[in-house]
Image (cartoon, rainbow, N blue to C red; front, side, top):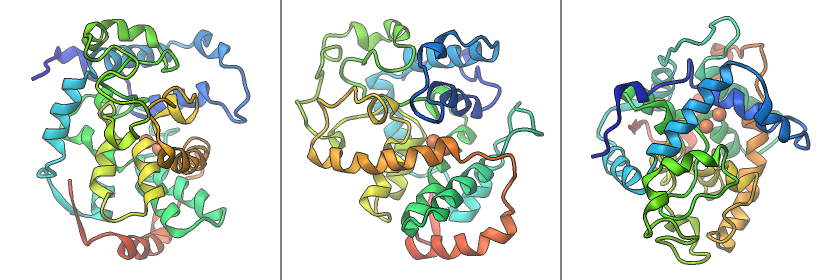
Length: 288
Ligand SMILES: [Fe+2]
Ligand SMILES: [Fe+2]
């Protein structure tokens, strides 16, 4: 069992600090300077940096395998899909309630932005569901094992991952089984054979894999894999199928990052449409 001190759990005032920070790193439009990112002067950045230090230190190959065993049994809870969204929304943290959207509002804004652009209904549903895996926090998981950029474990960490210097503290960086370019994997073996750092993406993918179309599953599973979908740092592990499917991951990302608007969606007006959509693709209840 991986153990870590109690103080090494939740440096962020809110899970949203990670996504807010992504907006600084990948501002809209995409072109803007990344150099400025590291110099951006804001005390809030210190908590984000600390968050990544913990994430990069503790997300080892063994940690991921342990979390897969623990959570992919889906024996924690069983809820209707909308009930699971409401459960996610009980996640309250220290963020400013006046300016921050709650989890359900972010999901609805993402879905509505996708719907407004005329995309297929399963794409819209993906927007609604994509962060539902954050319920992991409600099971007591530390923030750095729920959110944050994801990356392959079991092979060398790319220096294109944010704050790569913190991987120096990860035991895998000094383990010859895991610290070579391919590590435990084969060249272009396909991401289906690759274990990703543990978090809300993989957990939701595993929950949905029997129900949603393949492009939707890629969006769910890899939406936080910025080192690939923004930086192409792991082309050497992708196969042709991954490359085709990452076009969808790329199509999804702007809706996740740039759909946030201060005007909260009216949940009661939208709920009937989304309940129908849920019923079209998903079973009556979900096992968490
Ligand atoms: Fe997410
Ligand atoms: Fe999101």
